Image (cartoon, rainbow, N blue to C red; front, side, top):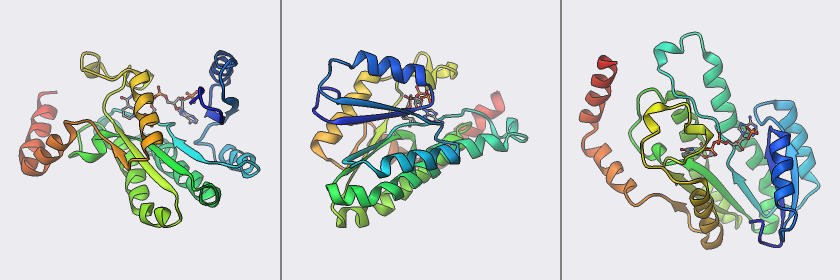
Length: 230
Ligand SMILES: NC(=O)c1ccc[n+]([C@@H]2O[C@H](COP(=O)([O-])OP(=O)(O)OC[C@H]3O[C@@H](n4cnc5c(N)ncnc54)[C@H](OP(=O)(O)O)[C@@H]3O)[C@@H](O)[C@H]2O)c1
């Protein structure tokens, strides 16, 4: 998007990385603004909302996310895992949407949600915190979509498969699985932006969705077998 004549506001916690990115994009067409905020911290979210209240907004890309892979039996004293995933992956994007809807209505704008293909599938063991929080926002947005469309706000969701980013580094099982490069994930987001299609999902997602319905019992038994072996 840096090659488009637009104003980009990039939000994340790590100010050094934001500055580095802004520096790399100095020659680009877009005007780059950076805003460092922890989107799990209510005060910082409120401050950010105040900041964008004075700006026109055409596009909101909900990308910041946190994943946790941990068995429930190792989470008995870790209520905070569920709180931080639900905050960043669900409650904050809802709050940002609520704040941005009047602006997006004015600009006939576009919300793009970076989701995970797993939310379309039968749940997988060890991913309860992540999957529940990503599914929550996916459901919220799908439920809001007809109202938003009625107000001429477009909504698109990228149901991404694995992407080789920092997020999957701690999960050993993912290291040898095929995964998209971040650039390919960015291309998918641009594709949704340009085509305004409602969703992107990998070609094989439909097969896994169907298998999840047809072989739900087998999937559950496989999960139980996996846990027993572990
Ligand atoms: N990687 C995958 O396999 C995969 C697959 C499907 C979907 N996704 C989705 O893709 C999106 C991007 O994930 P990624 O793979 O790029 O993960 P990542 O490498 O961990 O990047 C996460 C991004 O979100 C920002 N962020 C994290 N916590 C934040 C917070 N509390 N406040 C503000 N910004 C925060 C991070 O910057 P700072 O750390 O500087 O804050 C970073 O820019 C997520 O929504 C994820 O669920 C990823």
